[in-house]
Image (cartoon, rainbow, N blue to C red; front, side):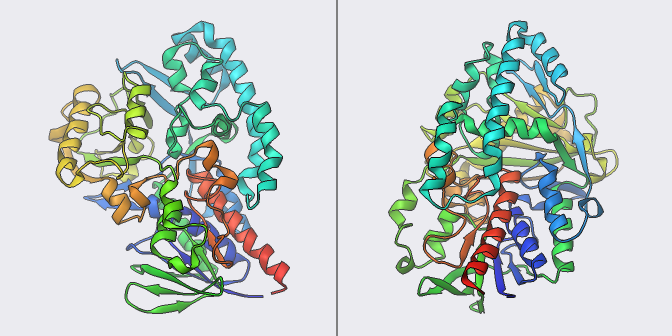
Length: 497
């Protein structure tokens, strides 16, 4: 039976669920707080430059393809993905780099440049991660609603040492200090600390090896535009500048949404792409929260936040040593991450992710110009950092570092600039404590132990996005949309509706 479904939030998770539900024949309205869709994938247009606001590493194209196939369409007709190689160029603190490549033999040659003794060790590491991937990949688009589902996978977690911290897991195989960093950084892409994120998340390594790392021509804004076009073609309705202030319920069921302008919209089912801790604490009345009390929410361990600078230059930097995706590691690795994740300090130093998309796609900048974004991990707002006072100083420090080490005469060539900080994640993106990746991916905050895709408080409320299963990162968030849509379909069939 056709249902009226409201989707809160137009990020990747909300769009993935909305499209699947519209393709199933439901009447779907999507409510987005901001002036255009995208969520963390929002694209900024500044002085002729297009800057992707958030995720830039695109893996597992099949997940995108599945969404369009569910609607009887072909993804290639909506946006184009191109493979990148190297996936990442990873620099040590002296400016020497490792090219993280798709081809296995080329990876071995890179290892040879650093430590030939780790060549056979890398083969064993890859084989181990392949086993982890084979066992756990099927669960990335399945819900974990009960403890039995968790108990079924625990023997495999134990057998494959999936509980071990990623850095310790890598260190069982790799001996060279810098190479240990190279092969343990992936948890940082999903808000985790390599020193406590369980090694079961090394399945990300195999996601990349299986399907590669890609870039969408036009940036992630092109992906969002493709999703938007498809959703409208399916009869979906988009409401921009429409902030939901309260999810109204009765007898364990959502009845309607109260908007910032005071209007109320009824819905049979609600899918929420908002940050789960924020939604429970600020959009759902305490009377409906028996499990997710304020105290329970505050006991979660949250990810770090981000400081991101978007900048465009009036000259090209094609003669630099930079690739499309660059990771610039600090001399301090463990100590820096300890400062960020545990001590909640804003260190004087930093490690950076530098995105240079115009090396692949000059169309997103004016002719003869270069587009960049540089990201620095910073503590979330549980730290005592006054960003209103410190933001400009921190931005200057990062840009000065890039000018001194990677981009000569940078400051005099910048003609477009914007930045976001933890206050943006809290106030604009409604991320609890400004945590950029929501709940941190630890062993006891994964799968069944994360907030569930079907709410445990309101029977017809479903969650998608980084704060629910399977977690942060584009493939996981898109998979959460599939999980929610399938759950809704299954629940309706079981109820006979």
